[in-house]
Amino acid sequence: MALCELFDLEELRLLENNLEDLGNEIFLAQMLRGSDEVRLLISSDETPLAMAREDGGWKAVSFLWKEPSDELIEMLPGLDISVYTCDTETYREAVYDHFARKIMNEVEPALDDVPVDRVKKVSNLVWKEWDFRPGDLCYDCCCGSGVGSLALTKVGLRPFAFDIDAALLSRGLRSGRLQAWSTAQLDATKASQYLERAPFALMLMAGDINVGNTWIWQRIFEQVLLIADQVMVTVGSQEEADTLRSWAEAKGRSPKVFENERDPFYDRWVCSVR
Image (cartoon, rainbow, N blue to C red; front, top):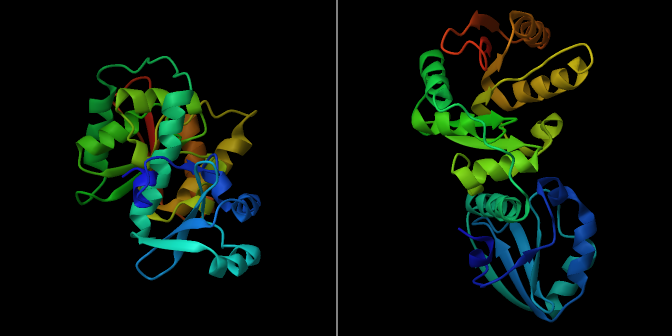
């Protein structure tokens, strides 16, 4: 559902520009200006989700990862407020959809170079390695243009994809491999700050892990371990997979490393963690 529809509006401008902005309190001050006409969106337990105000067009601020300011609360009794209700998950998906469509419409997509058989190979890997139920949530970490998400969908998992590269996300969204309501532009080194724990997480082709970038891959991998019960990461070499295994063991997890004969290049080695 479009964000504007939750407020029964035809158009709405969200003040925050991306997922990480949702925790920034600076946007609250912009809601102190505008007309007396206000629309408040709350959850079924009356938790504030967002506030919209008419100001030469409707603008809104989100309360997903920040509370309404004292100044905002104090001025509410003097405003003409209409209250709307939806569940938190519906609102969250509408916010993801809002940001993703902005990327899809405004960012030039990366070139598409996905081999035609890769989705099938990844689907088979997931199907053989994990014991899951249809509809289980699986994060597609550092998702690129969405090969993992499409593979997860084909086996019945429910993907949520994130990556920092807007051009790759734009390609994935335009191709249909990624869905707007379940995609976010997010720095993977901060994933646990924004995402709740899920049963599964997949990270494809996490390489090249070398001396120069080991520190950043370790931070990303440790974040992925924080957001999922079972994690599967593919890399190009056994050395990289063994490095991942050592990081998982250092965090008290149980990893195994194996060679993936389905794909001699993209997903040659696998580190699977419980």
